[in-house]
Length: 97
Image 1 (cartoon, rainbow, N blue to C red):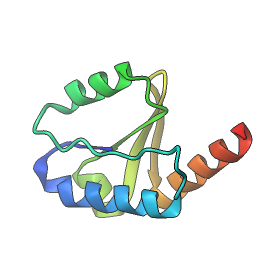
Image 2 (image 1 turned 120 degrees about the vertical axis):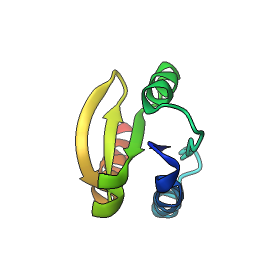
Image 3 (image 1 turned 135 degrees about the horizontal axis):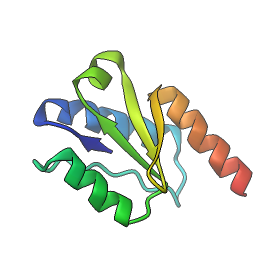
Image 4 (image 1 turned 45 degrees about the horizontal axis):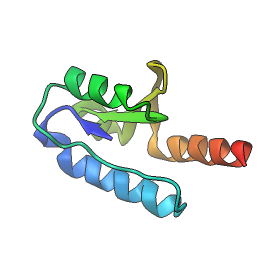
């Protein structure tokens, strides 16, 4: 999960903790990147790692309690609630088992 500015750092930590708590799956790794870098740089860097999902939070997402979701292959899944993203992860896990 990536933040756009330092103002969203606490929200990013909160969302990461919520996802980790909802999905206590040992093979699932949820991390945050709170570095003070441009968001395009962070997205590109993490996209090269071929992560299944990249979450981005800015001021709008923080205010609405949502996250912007990008799937592998630079597919923009749009903005969704944290609960909807957790549901998406659960569906992916259940369909791949």
